[in-house]
Amino acid sequence: MTNQAAFQLRLGQFALLIALTIPISALADNWQVQVGAQTNDKANQALAFLPNELWIHAGDSITWTFPTSELHSVTFLTPGQIRPSRLVGCPGTNSTPDFSVVDGTACVNSGILMDGATYTVVFPETGNFKAVCLAHNDQTGTIHVLDPSALLPHDQAFYDHEANRQRARLISDARNAAEVTTDHNTVIAGAGKIHGTSGGTETASVMRFMDETKVIHVGETVEWTTSEAVTNHTITFGPEPDALHQIPPSSNVTVDPDGARHAYINSPSDAVHSGFITQAPQDRIGLAQAPLGVTRFRVTFTHAGIYPYICVLHDELGMVGKVIVLR
Ligand SMILES: [Cu+2]
Image 1 (spheres, rainbow, N blue to C red):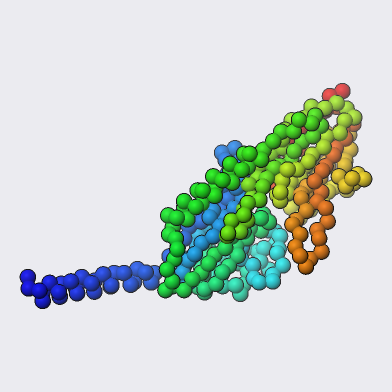
Image 2 (image 1 turned 90 degrees about the horizontal axis):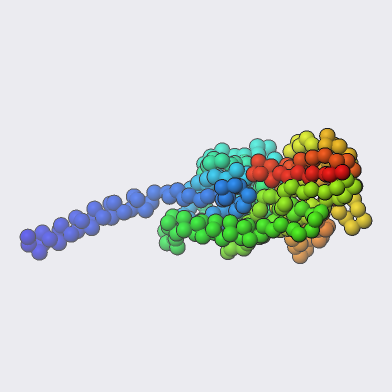
């Protein structure tokens, strides 16, 4: 082969390389993210986007997979939009369809998903977008959308590894947060921690009553306290109030002088609902401080019997308990 022919062959190879690479790099990528993780018994929950920070190109899409029994959403609110409840979602529609466009001009919401469901959105414009879960206050993420000509810092393999790392840390923290009180008449209703990453916040939660069976005597009072940072729980005897009426307590619950809620239960057929037991949200400069959270719930049992109860938000995860009242 002459030098000339070799040069032309190399030129041809170069042209072929360009022909192969340009269309491929111009193709939009689809990125994969997991929402939440749990242990087999569903007690320990990672309430997080795994991972919660990605750098992508304008035109790319992201697919979130929701593998847990705990419910989540992935939601993009518009700047200044008041955060809606998970039951309301985006104005007038709640959820928006697969392949909705996130560009900061319209509310986009997967709706509440679980048990393996997926949701995909497209990012046609550059910008930095905040992802939130409408079911969990401290579950946020950031999507950096760069110009298609920009070099991306990470690939999918990096994000898979980062997801595993964040998942392991959150589940381990949930395990460490679980505790059983030594106080005879106290039950801890959930335990959890908030984590920070440069992409946002994530929560590790134990969805259990600790301990779940209490044995007391007639006339005694059981007190539920919380070791949770942000996740809400309830202590509910009898029928479950419908989803729109779960935040306040039932009308037979009173407030003790120290702010704890208190009810009397006279029979296993009595219906008593604590309302949300929860920490006050974090305060922000420029806004009125939040009132104290309701972190204690007391029930005085006046008759012997077996009294099962649930957390209406997490009973499907096994967050149930019972009080056995002896004569
Ligand atoms: Cu709960």
